[in-house]
Amino acid sequence: MNAPVTQLEIDQRVFDLYDEYCHGRIDRREFLARAALIAGGLSMAQALLPRYALAQTISFTDSRIKANYVTYPSPGGNSGQMRGYLVQPAGAGPFPAVLVVHENRGLNPYIEDVARRAAVEGFLALAPDGLFPAGGYPGNDDDGRSLQAGLDQAKLRTDMLNSARYLKRHKLATGKLGATGFCWGGGTTNYLATVLGADLQAAVPYYGAAAATAEVPKIKAALLIQFAENDAGINGMWPTYETALKSADVRYEAHTYPGTQHGFHNNSTPRYNEAAAKLSWERTVAHFKKQLA
Image 1 (cartoon, rainbow, N blue to C red):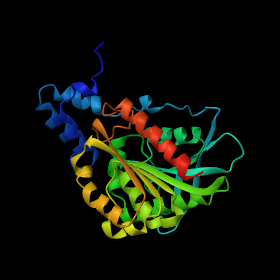
Image 2: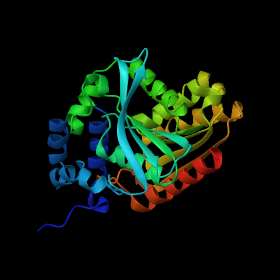
Image 3: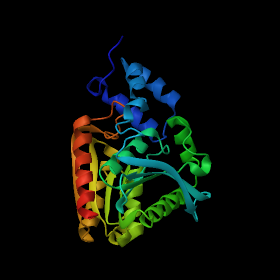
Image 4: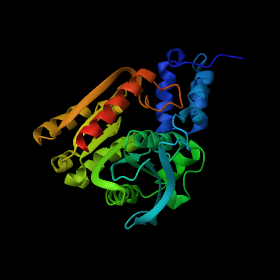
């Protein structure tokens, strides 16, 4: 049996193509075709496609948590209704709450596992499925990415905003709210910080687009901003964003993880960097425990 391809064996050009594919700038066929032009690139490209069996670190039946799917109103969203994966710690509560926002492909198994990881740490976690109005996460990322791109993007953000408000008001929640998200979800986390203002106490965007500069003064949450080292598009936004945060006296802390790619926290592909993912998650949990206490 051939050994699996590791991150160190993947050509940076293939990582760059995968980033284009993940963000919908090229489709799967073009990603594989262009990777095949690089020596050994096709096998590298195939190795980058997600393997969600690897993503589960907390079992669905873990005795420390209780998980179920919930539906709730979402006025002004894509359908007026939303569905999410709600995970509560064992015990009666109430618990501080954390919204977990998915990437640009819907609520896949990796994001559900992140919600379970948050619940194990003592948080009431909700991972909304932005694709619910389109039938829900379809079971694979290619179709999920297409479905999400086809939604009204302003209404999709409204669905995430309504999800945050639903979670904050949940009977098991203390009223203290945090948010984290990855890629598209990282950008949405920055957006939620501007819209929610004082209703959001803490935010941890992972490699997400910066908030609109004019909206930064509305941020009241304490930010912990996580960057990959090799992520030119996102990192290029940081100088302007940091200037705006400083000007508005927003509390923030930023970390860049050496040798990492965009998506380094996602443990279902070789972009995963175990050391960086572990350290960034420890920082995320500590941030939420401090700010949501």
